[in-house]
Image (cartoon, rainbow, N blue to C red):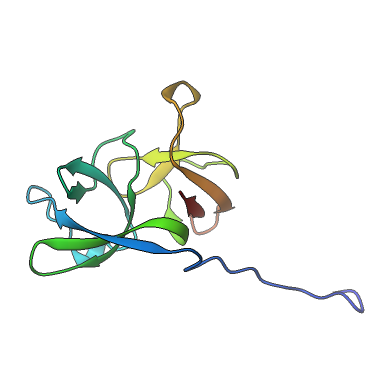
Length: 129
């Protein structure tokens, strides 16, 4: 590092974070091993891993034992796994297995935007609207 140069790290986790409680999909039954994965709205007040190309509702934060889950549905989220490398600024959709991927340009506009891409860890930072 050159003399006088300052190295800084920028953290996004928990900025403007918002959580909402939903029902756990009884067919796929999200578990604690799914925490940190992308989830989609699959029925009335119910979330699951969804299907390939589905609009991402948010990121799973908590799985309760009574059939309820907590989803982060707004703010910034770090360490979100991806299945196809997005570019910074891309909008994303679900891959159906808990990861995200860039939205096809012909598919419309997703609600969450990629702020940073880590190709080593295969993770992104999302800004969720």
